[in-house]
Length: 387
Image (cartoon, rainbow, N blue to C red; front, side, top):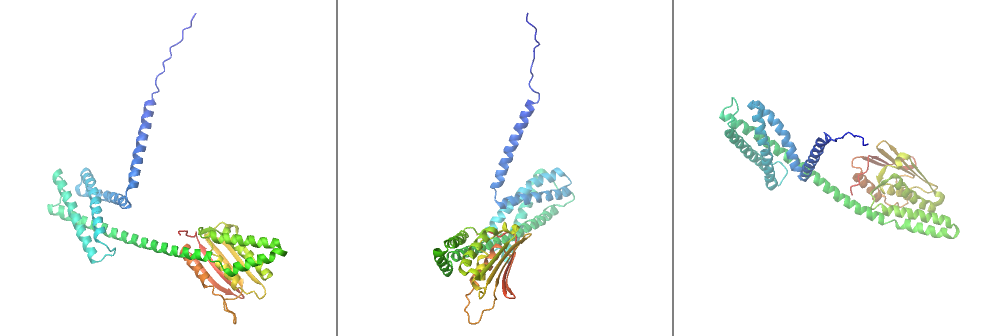
């Protein structure tokens, strides 16, 4: 005997259609937004500024027309028709300025050109407005026919004149910035070539003495010779790598200094004592590569070694500021009867690199205190690495 089963009817979900429509609308909006974004990105900076600037002006113009006509629909219609005309007219004015006004300075000829084009553009705008009002049968309440022409003509003449002056101000500023960037690139390339030459032209006396010291140590102290050779290799690698790495961490810079001082200590033995102090925070800060090397070389080469030459390097960070002190025993005055090597090239190189990497954000002093010479650096912020 077969049991009767109830018939089940499954109806479509009442919201499935609306959900599909919502997804479809979302996809359409996404496509439209993507197309608008792509179109906006394809516009030049000038036309992007035109659209934003005249759009903001159109809002102000709408308020003025609403007060003049007393009818929002009339004011909105005229604003929507006139604002694009203003953008097109100023685009044409810009083309004339680019072709005629070769100089960015506002001389007499340029001012006359601005006045003539502004008056012409204002007259065209007033003509368009007058034609639209005649076609649509609109007029400004309580204004005479002369006022309907003269007042808008003066108003738009001032608008176009202001736009022209602002355009020349922006163009002059951009030209000055481009000139500064060009000068900076030229200086950077010159300095880069100078740095490459400085790093590739190693002091032949230093290299000769280092290799000679390695050779002397090999028979009796092979371990010391190997350590000296490793320090020399590390120093040479740091020097050559710095050509392409213009900015490194303080830790990397100190590794090169340590290797250099290690080679010098192997040469001078107990006559040279060195101390390097770097705070943990300063070790991870960025610094222009090979910036401290010339100062340390000066400290070793020109320091007093009658008994013991002491070289102290102290690097610490204080907020955004990096403070460096390189101190050595000796004086800045030239000793009698001794011919002193000229340290000017290294110091001048440091000054030029500071001006490039830390423009107006650094301080460099070279002075003496008692029987010691101190080179002090104050570096604010991150170094520029634009070359």
